[in-house]
Length: 356
Length: 154
Image (tube, rainbow over all chains, first blue to last red; front, side):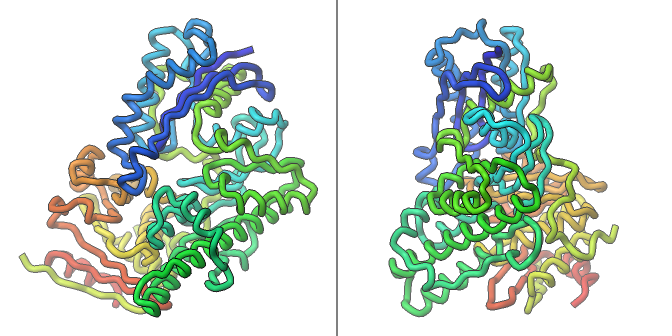
């Protein structure tokens, strides 16, 4: 049995947690998250410079809290896991440097974790499911289907060829004059609208495969908004609500249909969703419905473990350490770090290729 | 210091990607493209197509909206793809190391208004305008860009 401290600081949250157990059978002893949303609300998003500084200021505090809440002393740990990427480089660096310091001071193994692996392995932490399973990772910066066959064996079977849905939610919220972060703001506004008032496209649904596109949807919302503004001399609340509703429905339709196709192409017994966008009620319902139809078990970890947290990093570190894998002080922060570097990348690339 | 303009109109998404691929062959380290225009006007489509064409493979090009900067190793030097939307002051751009990148890398900068007075004079500004159904791109830059853009079709 291993006891692991996990540290996460790759975007807007600073988090630390202690997880104890073995692969597929672990429990969360503590999970502390310091959210920077309040700080960032004034700026309409996560402000990177502030984020890096706030991470530095908060890291040792959340780590101390996580250890104390778990009732575990540093000396009782078996390893220190930290997000080494991908993410906002200042934030990732803050976490990695902190973890290195702790590792050097205690002699404990340092385990670098891919943030996406943390999300992808969360169903094993929360539900103890076995490999293989299919995962939809859908967040601010990512949107991909992963076939998870082992703790270090990921095959991307599809994903966005342009924007991630979380990013689209944020940008559409800006277009509609709604606050940031855009996801919750649009969901709230969408409760009052009529989607049929604004016909929006479902990009790539007419094409086979599991790749998705959200950029064209953004342009379509922009045009619909401009038309509404031109017709009424401003954006009326009713148009705002209709646009938000139609947009959320379009995203939900695309994710549901592509999930259905991904499951059809890769039959597994369990489908799990993770990432901040999985917090959206309409999207969850749509995915649940797909799984019910296909008689596939649907797993959506509790919201606190869907969004960024330290427990998933501690757990992913636990899986690595249990396989004898760890890093040394040369561990570096990586802003880009695809989980599956071998599958062919997305379509939608420049068709003519390089001249050089 | 005179600036000159070149405009491309009636750009479909495919035509935007083709133009970006043409730009890819034109750029060298130290070149800075400032991509301006509203959300949904085609900035990211252009940047992605340019990077993929430059790298010569269908590289996954995630949006830099959350990470601010994404870098790609290129045979001639790194490519920096930046989205400065979430910056609040030009000083933050220097914390990211943008000043060095302007000299040594090929830089594609979305939301360059965040640079304020610090926009590099040598940069080429591409202004994206969303039409229905096609987009328009206007390039504005110093005279030496005119000769280089002359190598592009149109």
